[in-house]
Length: 284
Ligand SMILES: NC(=O)CC(=O)C(=O)O
Image 1 (cartoon, rainbow, N blue to C red):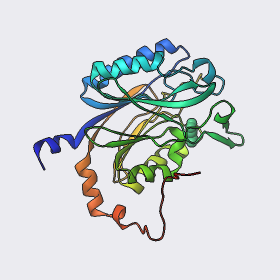
Image 2 (cartoon, rainbow, N blue to C red):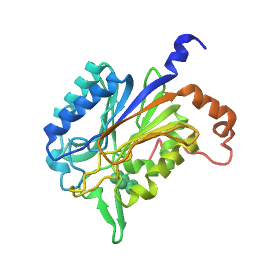
Image 3 (cartoon, rainbow, N blue to C red):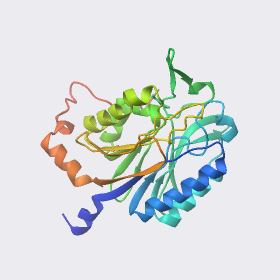
Image 4 (tube, rainbow, N blue to C red):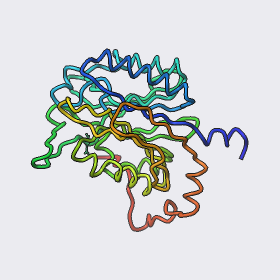
């Protein structure tokens, strides 16, 4: 392997666990300064949490929604360019054609908008006595897969509830991703029960890196986020995490290590494609 290829197989990832308030301007300026801080620590890819510019809740999405491009994506584009980082801009409520989406904008290190991921699986759940949440009351689902290239590896993006659907992660893995990123906002019921378990499951099943970015916990908000932004390696181990406060979580991604794990336990090439397969639906 050449020196360049070896250098490109390792990079630093930063996950920003932002304290999100109901003042959009404050959320944007705090995110901007933490992106700068993350870049200063050598990060090449920076991730923000789900709904980083707005409180998370069906009652807030229309008020905070923006078109893309708009105020929030303008800040993200500038921050990516100024700091020369790939930037996964968490998510924002997006308005398009009268519909609202939970959308993750992704920027290249020159500030170009590379793609947007609209949350595919809406968070509609009812756990009696604990939490009922119906994103579909105000949001529409996206219907596209979201993978982008970096000089290091392909990266697949989902938003929060999307992590519960193993097939999406498997498809991204089949598409060649070495890292899956899920901006997310689990809560005080599903967070302790499922947040880390799902990340480790997606990482282990597909033998790749998984990163999540949550808002920091705010006990006074109507939706209390679990926090615990985390990075998991292809062996299924948590390599970096945090508690509930605002923080930047760093992890060094090593794609040679990923290849080593895949050589040791070669499930990715042992799948019985003659018996079962997960494929994108091309026609409906
Ligand atoms: N907020 C989400 O989209 C998902 C979540 O909290 C959960 O799956 O639990």
